[in-house]
Picture 1 (cartoon, rainbow, N blue to C red):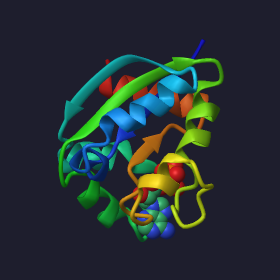
Picture 2 (spheres, rainbow, N blue to C red):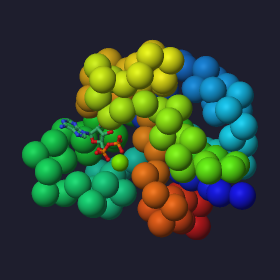
Picture 3 (cartoon, rainbow, N blue to C red):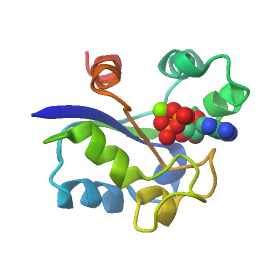
Picture 4 (cartoon, rainbow, N blue to C red):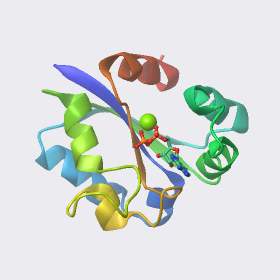
Amino acid sequence: MAQTLSIIKPDGVKKRIIGKIITRFEDAGLEVVQIKRLRLDVAQAQDFYAVHKERPFFKDLVAFMTSGEVVVMVLEGEDAVEKNRELMGATDPKVAKPGTIRADFAQNIDANVVHGSDSAQNAQREIAFFFA
Ligand code: ADP
Ligand code: MG
């Protein structure tokens, strides 16, 4: 069984769609095996997104991810990493496929409701980051 890390970002928590998002994971055969709600501080957000630190949007990304509480969870199931990315949809909700979480709930590329690990290796690192 594969595992991946999912984060419901501050916009998703503020919109009170935690349940709707988790229902999509569960309906697709992904099980929530660990979950918690927390607020990232700036150092944690910078560390979590360190791969993007040279990108022009890094500062905005860290500001957004620390703007409110998030829900972090470990999803488990067959092809969990790929399945979660499919359910999320493209980074930019304008180009995300209809029926994906981002197409249905996200405002724009900054406030795009969910994070999901993009590879098995990053999933391992990201799960360890929150659930050591
Ligand atoms: P994803 O979340 O789909 O894996 P990335 O890892 O490329 O996307 O980027 C991480 C996050 O940074 C995105 O979810 C988005 O919130 C933000 N981001 C990515 N690209 C841009 C961009 N061009 N402008 C603003 N924010 C961006
Ligand atoms: Mg990414």
